[in-house]
Image 1 (cartoon, rainbow, N blue to C red):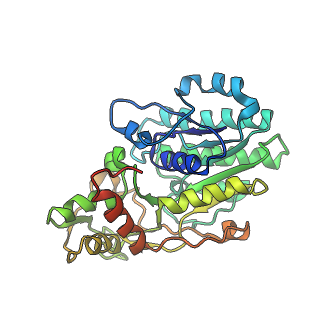
Image 2: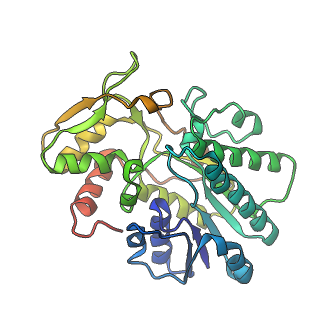
Length: 328
């Protein structure tokens, strides 16, 4: 049995789909569905159970002999979340409780961290998991800070020789795009914002730069196709000897302008871009550049190539965003 917390969310539901395709164990999702269309992320899946988060530990206790891996993708994912108490409860306290449960019962744990833990990138994007390296990072929002706090707590526990799950992996996801992110609204990938503009014959709106060292549209992200993230997670599932905190990006930053141009090309259109002022409320905590350093995951044995931006965008646009049914 596999348990996926946040399994109705973006990355979580793609992991659920991959686990179902493997067919080597029942899949249980722990999540709330709410009143939006997140249920559609699971609409094609066969699930053994769907457990509300407040009942999760009762479920785990009742089924602990059968659980192979817990994929902890749940928690606050919005970088705009201002409720620090909510972020702390979801991204730190719950994760800490799951760590303790997995260590106590010998269950493997693969959990979601975030590239947001790197803050403005001034300390680089090296996934050094030592307590000293993690202490130098300064996240810019409560969501990333709470995830970073958990990364630091894990590092300290390991350094002190305290009990750990038989396999533990934290993944610092960079800028993921792909199917099943539609419920995220403003927090969805830039692709979901540009696509309807381009498809309807309107210009793609990108932020102007408010730094002299970056031209408009040259702000850059390490964009990664969600299928590549899932492939890495499945590889980790098949390699229980691999432990650690790893970046999960492509290792190559691409600009927002390049992303917009790729979407227009996937639609068979000429790029049409306009630049707008960045909202004042995010200017002082906006990341202008992210690029995952991928040496550690590669050194752990992961060899699969990452999908080039144009290929991933074309797949997203043509196979999902333009389809009658855009869900995986």
